[in-house]
Image (cartoon, rainbow, N blue to C red; front, side, top):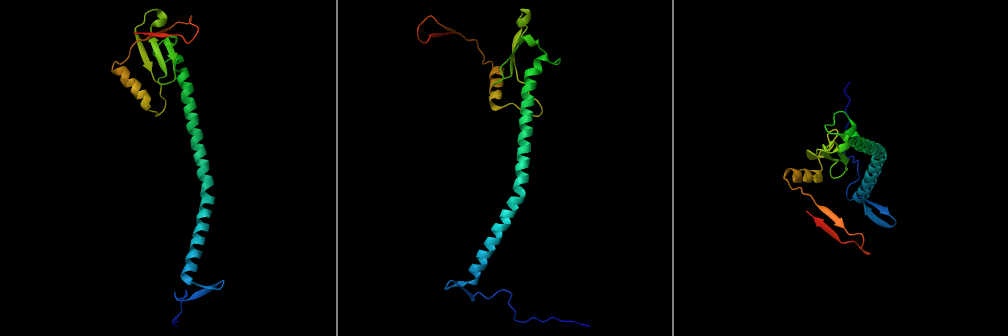
Length: 166
């Protein structure tokens, strides 16, 4: 048995020329459909934001906490490095600065025989030198390091004059 469905001249949407009365004024159907479509789009967008925003916020907070923990672990490690067996210098010769380098090691000073002065930067994991740390490294490697002694006269009643000796 063959069944044929014949549909003729049936419009699913009203023609463009059809108008809908709205508070005494005639409004074109396409404008009404456009407004309804925008409204549906806004509702769908708000539902998507409501569904995905909490997950995104949770992930962002989780990442921030993990990064903060890694930084804190790195800072603690920097403080402990001189006391680890792998540290190649006498811990008494190491002076912690923190920034822009972690340590200045006066190698041999505790024994009374200063052999060299070493600037030490401690890194953990995949961390890299910052721009400032690279500038310091390059200045040291380029020999742009010098001694300066600052002497102030504290016997004066006002701000002490400062003398710099190089």
